[in-house]
Image 1 (cartoon, rainbow, N blue to C red):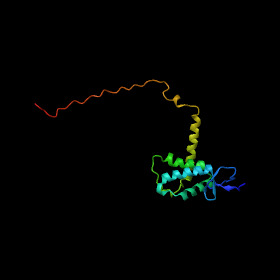
Image 2 (tube, one colour):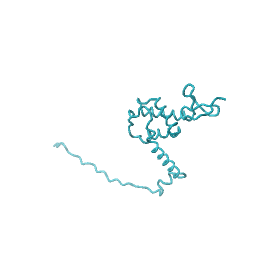
Image 3 (cartoon, rainbow, N blue to C red):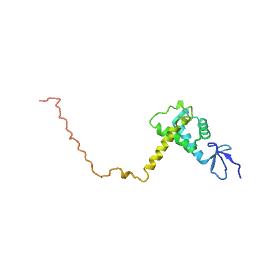
Image 4 (cartoon, helix red, strand yellow):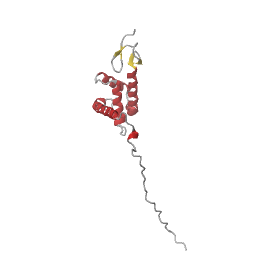
Length: 161
């Protein structure tokens, strides 16, 4: 029986014999799910922050938010996804202000949770409904009459006789 180890990302102790794990660093262990979400967070940060991305800073931010701020890895990934891909989809993110990490998360935490609650509420309202029920209910045909196009009169630029 292996001694209990602590997850690199979420800080919870687990038994390596009973839980699926991976070893992201030498003699360090992480839940498979935590490592999956951490990898997704790193890829998103690397894509959006480009040359300002610092892997160590993102790792430190992940550990800080999970241990001190009470995020689990799924919610942390959701907040990062919300900030990068939903909230700022059309805007250019000023990566130079990020400091190389994902430190914006504590400031958008409440906004992210409100967004998630609205998404769950909308999903519950739409359970059992199909888009066919709302689109073209009367099945009436719509005809558009376009005004006739008049051809311009020809102009005689040269008067040949």
